[in-house]
Length: 229
Picture 1 (cartoon, rainbow, N blue to C red):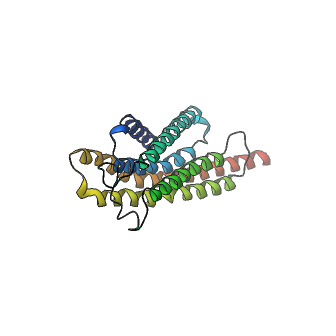
Picture 2 (tube, helix red, strand yellow):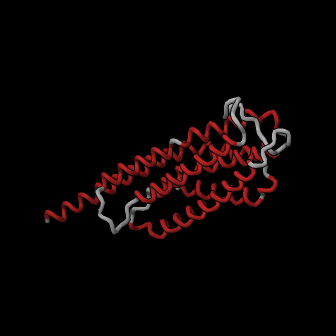
Picture 3 (cartoon, helix red, strand yellow):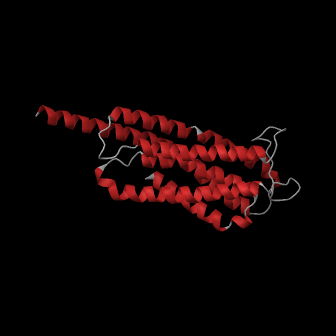
């Protein structure tokens, strides 16, 4: 599944970022954070597919991987917030050009901390919301009601995509002339991979929900047949 690839991609990026966090500039902290948030909808799609009886073991592995990612993501967000405390426009690696992602009179790093806090909360709220809306085998909830809530939460999760996409592109564009060396060109590969997976993740979200709807209809029809018999 594409969501599994995205999960592994996110975990790999997180582990690499945490392992080298002392050498990461504030600009790269921001870029990595935006890329990590791209995976949020993919995780929601994975949670929405934990309903088939034949995938119990795979579902547990996904849940465990998402829990690990969430812990590492929170740790990275805390480090990003601490690094924002060191904001200094006169010191290299401790600032970035914000002309495309903030107003000219914005106070830094105050607005950056607000962005970090709101988006971090939004991602966790989306994951937890869909985890609660995902039916368990022991429950006998109405399929249409569950489908409505899954569609609603997936829709809310998708709303963060344009925000992080604009932030990543705007930040890269405004700082393009300030970067030096080949490290940014190498890191840009990760940005391109994450952005090109966006469309595939959206398609997977829709496919997952449609598959779940078909599954509910099949269960309902089987229940009606058993009742009539």
